[in-house]
Structures are given as structure tokens and as C-alpha cells.
Amino acid sequence: MNVSGMVWAGTLVALTAVLLADLFIIGRRPHEPSVRESSLWVSFYVGLALLFGVGLWVTAGGDVAGQFYTGWLTEYSLSVDNLFVFVIIMARFRVPRKYQQKVLLIGIVLALVMRGGFIAAGAALISQFSWVFYIFGAFLIYTAVNLARQGEPEEDEFKENILIRWSRKALPLSRDYDGAKLTTHEAGRRLFTPMLVVMIAIGTTDLIFALDSIPAIFGITKEPYLVFTANVFALMGLRQLYFLVGGLLDRLVYLSYGLAVVLGFIGVKLVLEALADNNLPFLNDGEPIGWAPHIPIWLSLSVIIGCLAVATVASLVKSSRDRRRELVEARR
Image 1 (cartoon, helix red, strand yellow):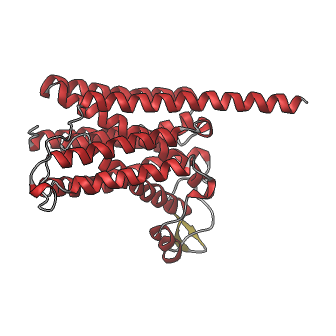
Image 2 (tube, helix red, strand yellow):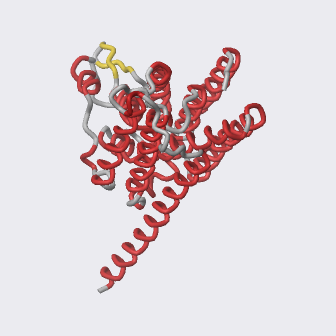
Image 3 (tube, rainbow, N blue to C red):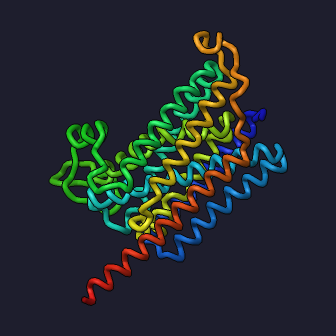
């Protein structure tokens, strides 16, 4: 796929315009969105992603569109796992509900900028060193095993990273929020509000999650343009998804296991691709390993959709049974 500079520029301008419009709407009327409003926004962003994929299908072919859809779905599903930690961060910092939209959006914009750097670095590594797929694959398999062992996130899972701790110590911070403002005046001094620390927490936490999601999507497509746009479309609707499914997150008890299977599958896929393109001198005398199978994009998409569907249905069935059991016990 040969993406010209004009296409890159046009895509960046269009996506930036959408994000700025979103930020302008939130800034005019801070509020906690209703289920209907959140549903409409999630549908809008999902629709944008689907239309973008159709555009790729028309201009670049079905295989490219399939890579985008598979990468977008993978990133979107991994982003849902981020929401568990976002809920914990909002509770930890006691962010008022009506200002949480702005926090999430700015944090996500920061994450997009930082992810752009990750994607550029990953693309450069892959173009120069094909053996990096061995590292990506092994890391994803390791992450999948850890995720399966941990199960659903606990409230103490979020730990403040070094940047958050530094900001608490180095920045002059007020004790209370001042609406959605990042700065305020107290006793004649201009201070930063806790809102800035929360935005740093959201942005850097999402960047940490990118350590597994970026290698995962490179296991689906090596095209930087598709990797970047899939990440953007996955994160753009994350804010509305937070309010839409926030109350359901505690019911998705098996989501982590489904995501673990997805990451494990992509990790194995990466290792197989690395074997097929092998040039390590100490492995098969530096020759490609012919028996390593190629996993087609349609199979990857089927596995990802199947794992997420099974995990979601199983979670909802178990949660429903548990609630019925609690009601029966409460009546006794």
C-alpha cells in the first residue's frame, strides 16, 4: 500500500477537525451524557470507522480494508479493557461526573500523540529488522498469559506512574477542582488544579496499554497508515463508550480471558510470520522456515470476533446467574 503525503495530510486534517469539534461541544456544555447521547456518539464513531473501511475497499481493495477492520476491532476491544482502569482513576481522583468527558477527551488526545511516536518507531524497526516480530510475538504471548492469570481488574490495579508522582511533587497544585479548569487562583497565586494530574494519568495509562496493543496491530498489518488510523478510530469513540458501558464493566467478568486469547493468537501469528521471513543466522542457517503457515486476514478477523463474542456472552450469562442467586439468598 503506497500512501502519499497528501493522503496522510488530508487524513490528519480531517481527524483533527473531528476531535476539535468534539472538544468544542464538550467545552460549551460540560455534563454527564445520557445513555441515549452516548449511544448516538458511539454509533457515529463506529459508523465513521466503517465508512473509512469502505473507502479503503473502493480505493485499495478488500485485503487492505480487511486489515483495517481487523486492526480497528482489535484496538477497540483492547481499549475496552482500558475503561476498567479509567473508572478506577476517576474514582481515585474524585473527578465530578460532568467534567469527566473533558478529562477523557484531552487524555485520549495526549495518548494519540504519544501513540503516533510508538507507531513510527515500530514501523521503522520492522522495516529494518524483520526479527523484531519474534520479540513482539513473545511479548504478546507473555502478556496474554499474565492477563489470563489476573482475570478481571481489581480496584488496586492502578498504580501511579513516575510522571504522575512527579507532577504531584513538582507542580504547584490546588487541593480542590475549579470546574474543568487546569489552573486556578488561591491566595493570589496561580496553581494547577488536580484536573491536570488526572489528564496526565489518563494519557500515560493509555500509553502503557499501547505497549501491547501496538505490537498486536502490527501482527495484523505492517502498513503504518492502517495502524495509525485504526488506533485513532478506536480511541475516538472511547470517551462515549466509557459512559455507555461504564455500569456494565463489572459484568464483563470474562473479558480479560477473551482478550488474553486474542493477544495470544496474534502473538503466535507474529512468531509464525517471523519464522516464514527468518534471517537470523543461528536459526535454520538464516533461511526462511517453509513449514510456517500464513494465517490469512479473514481467519484473524473470525478468531477475534469469535473470542470477544464468547467472552461477552459468557460474562453476561454468569453475571445474570450470580444476580439471581443473590436475589434468592436475599429473600431467605
